[in-house]
Image 1 (cartoon, rainbow, N blue to C red):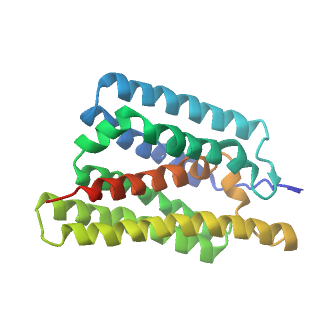
Image 2: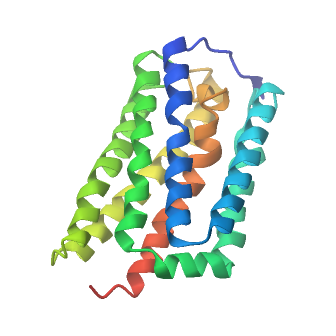
Image 3: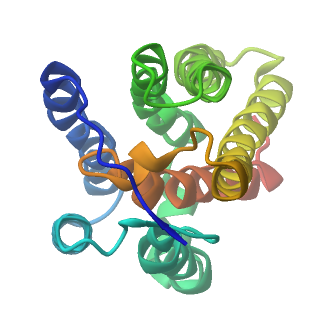
Length: 234
């Protein structure tokens, strides 16, 4: 187990990331507020505020500062958060109510926040991530985000191909996030064994918010879309 190297990312990249990272949280909160009660959206806001505070505290306290497998950031944030979503939230009555009442296209449009994948590319271009990983992961997120607009439009305009398009889009988006998560762990293993560049930068603030939040949230949204489409009849 090695200590993570501290990287000096250009200030403008870190600043831009901090400016845009509220986007996914805002989109989710607005979605919940529109479909459910103010109380529910308020509870989600409180949770995310506490979770982001926890991630920040853990990062600056050095909890993620060692290269290990599985990475500490997964043990302390990603895995517990995933358990909360797939072990608790998915069984709540309020979740089932929101899923039942939400138009499918509104859930699809939540994936627009994945344009944040551009930061993978920026970090790769500045040699803070392996370029092949950065471009595959980043472009996959950007393609999923931009194409979500067309998928949602197909439903809004009641196109005959909307359901089929959504299936293929949802499968692509799921594979993309699974590839990113698995590849990150493979690169961590290679980094431990050989000392080559891994994905250490994703364990440092503010970029640690990505693995702590994105994979479980994205997989949960894709799963919700598959659930929603079981009874889709349009």
